[in-house]
Length: 90
Image 1 (cartoon, rainbow, N blue to C red):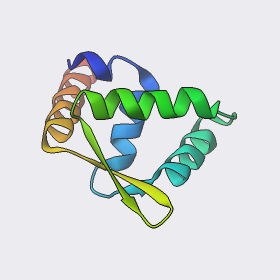
Image 2 (cartoon, one colour):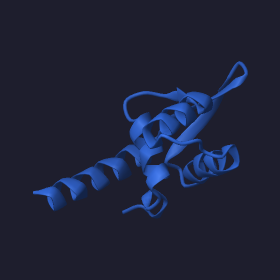
Image 3 (cartoon, rainbow, N blue to C red):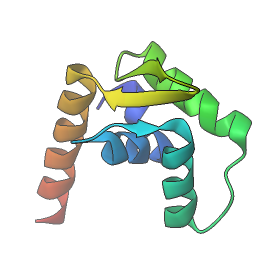
């Protein structure tokens, strides 16, 4: 498994980005809804930055918002993890 997907929130961010892109604020809100608790902004942006540094997500600026999308490497790492999970659940 990709080192950067060993963190649950990082994996979940990649899942949210699979098939679509999203603004940082929207991604943070969706994670907070899923976890049913507030996520510290500093922690959240550090996770996004780590994924970006690892080449799994890419960021572009659109107006005032940072918009993130999954890279090809991120998609591949997420699919590999999904296959592993599926094998474990069978």
